Length: 139
Image 1 (tube, one colour):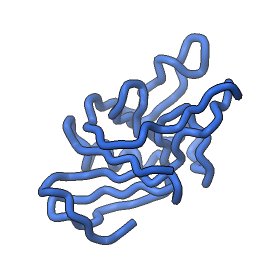
Image 2 (tube, rainbow, N blue to C red):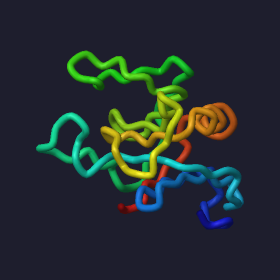
Image 3 (tube, rainbow, N blue to C red):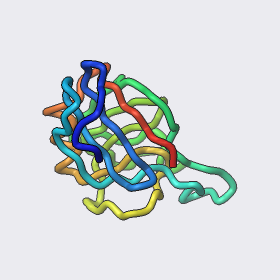
């Protein structure tokens, strides 16, 4: 992640699925924290017929969860998958901690952006707010 970017005077979280990283930039564009990330896969883990890539574009965080956050959709059919410290930004897509604590260097999720639990906790409680901009770069 670049150490400095133009954020337009707002906090921004950048997700780079191609390089499997995320970065949090403060209002003056300085990189505050960065880490590894896993985005959505080109093929869904449980359905080889469709893509689960994370939506590319600019979004705003619209919902914040805690350590007990769970998916309403996955695993199918009833949901309940752990998504610690979830920060929803596009429909059912969220930034969240990887439930097993591991972040592999491959895009394999159902569309969410997974990161280390400690990074998700930091991001959730020290940086992200409702309305914080999230930019998902192209794969």
